[in-house]
Image 1 (cartoon, rainbow, N blue to C red):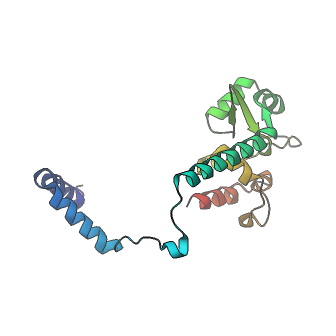
Image 2: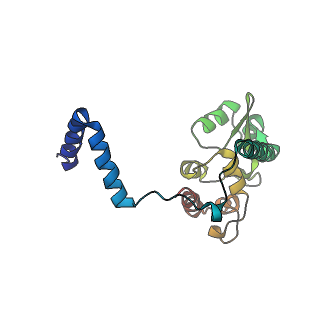
Image 3: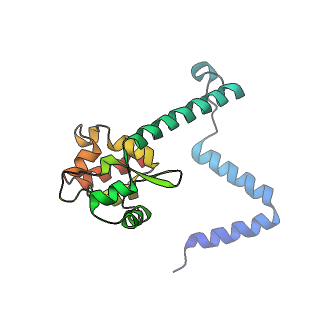
Length: 182
């Protein structure tokens, strides 16, 4: 079945070849009508744009913050070998889980570090359920996921996502993770 937009796209492509500036002006006009004119932020309310020094300082502060967060997650992480022993599998099997997005992991040089929150050593199956589903829904990095998973969430009645996964609330945790990316 033909999509009626195909005709419009074909016509646009033809016109672009003949008179590109006129077509672009028409598009700009149509966009202005649909979304309104571009409004600049009022410097009186928002302040002026940062200068190059302020931008560099903010970027450096952010890099330090990210390094601290990563170090915090790494400090509470298990090695690939530790996880293999915990799960009763080979180190290669753990690597396969990582590659298949079934476990959260971060690289530390040539080693993998696996955040401890995704395991319950007291359980018959120490790997929390739903990690693969959570990874599929999570919009950010493994470090951000680890911080979120260990922070109480209003979406989960004040429980941490890791605790909710431990209680089998996979759907609720995945929905909360998806809401972050929405």
